[in-house]
Image 1 (tube, rainbow, N blue to C red):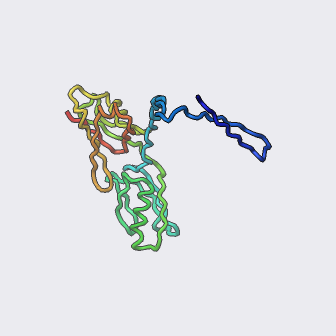
Image 2 (image 1 turned 180 degrees about the vertical axis):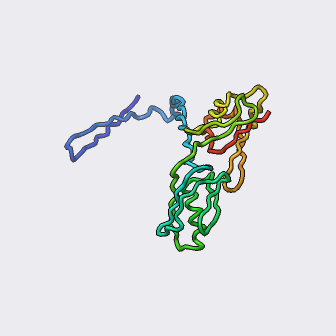
Image 3 (image 1 turned 120 degrees about the horizontal axis):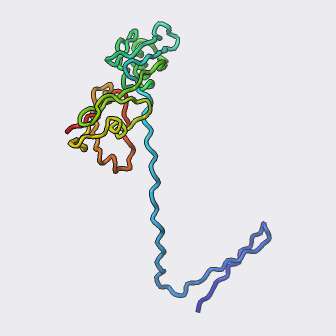
Length: 209
């Protein structure tokens, strides 16, 4: 025979009574198995946001050094990716963000100025470009007018040829320390839910056979 227990709860502030009935279990046996909850699907991942703007040859910059008109300069990034500034000479600009260049200039000026305050402004940016070569139908330059992934760049290049080695595509990326090589697997990228790989200005996508 089942018994029930009556628990009387008095809410003093409201001067009302709330009754809760709690059934007493009939036996001390094992509890019935809980109902399986429906499988929860993982929330789709938002595509990764590409890195902020990185300078490339041809960009026109304004470099301001606080309270020093002689060191403040309007410069253009040369084809070799560098700019020339008073006191510190040549410094790498291509491949860097304005903040990274600002920090590099500030660090170099510390030999001559106490606590230099530097600002880097991109006055005029060139049309950013990447390149696709190798086993694609239309090799050549692809504009980066908007953020572009490797998959999108390959599509703009006319797609892959029949004998392309889709597992060993390489992305050559120049940075201040040299040339970085990034491997890219086309088939894995099609199946994977991971964040896409975005191209940067000056990148070269090489599709081997």
